[in-house]
Image (spheres, rainbow, N blue to C red):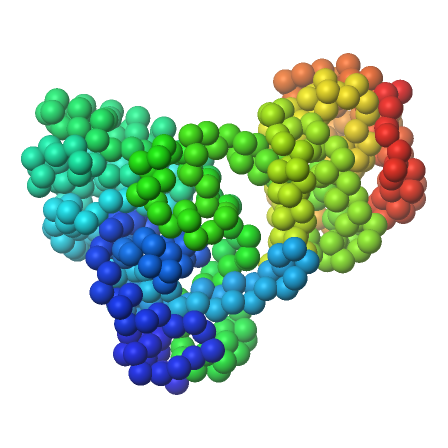
Length: 510
């Protein structure tokens, strides 16, 4: 079977959507640090989508910091790869296969640094993208004259300095830089590191002024599950369907969110924003960060213990159960949405919530509840405590679904035995690891306290939550009642009973 390549695309037909020849001739407008699946499945896919519609009309030069891995595959396949999109959108199952031609070439920072720096003199270049993992945006001692510098910010700074020199400090040649690393305020942090490194490397004042005033480093938030290469049997089936082998086959969910903080100039340069409603360029993206944190991540955190104790291994399995799916739906839209500590339009919040529920139902994604329980306490503190406090501030009522989720968290954290310094709990006849730094604390509490006192002790612990949650009227009593029911009648029956009692009713403070 032939490999995916430019030659194959120009000579053959396929069940996947193939690029047209003129797409291979587009100029290089983007420098991208990173070859990972998130970049391939989100920004690179979107740029390809825009190119097909005659909008962005630019390709990507990719910088790989280390040799080996998939750089050889990119060379063999002329930068081409297939994006297989699977999921549910507005209740409809979606299946799409596209051969992405956005990448023109992949260069090794280790062996082709001079060639990378030469790209700085390209007048067509407008954009820098990156995803170097969360540790990539860090200030380290770096020499920007090395070939190459050690860190990602060092490499980027050297590239920008080369561009400044190539165009004599022309401020029209500044770039729009959009990091997609999953850290808050990623653009703000990257810009601060670039400026600090410029000073440490004793770069001239004219360059530092150009760095600050001619370039825009944008905060951004990306959200798309991109598992990458599928299981071997699935890949073999798709190869038969497509008529070619693809070493870089990249599977992705349907949902897309890429929120970028920028002005009209940024919006104009990132013209691929026009081709997908999931790409948003606006001056403030905090709303999208809050909705993701509170509705998606917060729902995961308050559901993971309960769903796992009810016997479900994955999110999708739980969404196939009417009771647990009903709990997740109501938790998100009845409790968490009104509790978001940020001004949110209710229709926008409802729409976002329904998209999240579609994502949870995606048959192509296997997201395991046990993995979501990692660092359970820290996640509960960061994602859900602010929502709980704001809910009380707004409604002066007990959020029953949040209370049930919190009770399940307490029960999940009941360590029964320890092996090699790891605490294990027991559910449905099986042991499970408690991967949480507070596991010792909870094991000790469970060894000596009854549910009511344990609940009160945990809620009162301001070192855990930053607040005395015992002060919230009725919350401790409701959590205790649910915890006792979980212990006596099990998770699934408790969820069913809670739905019958609270659906259609407004919970009131006790």
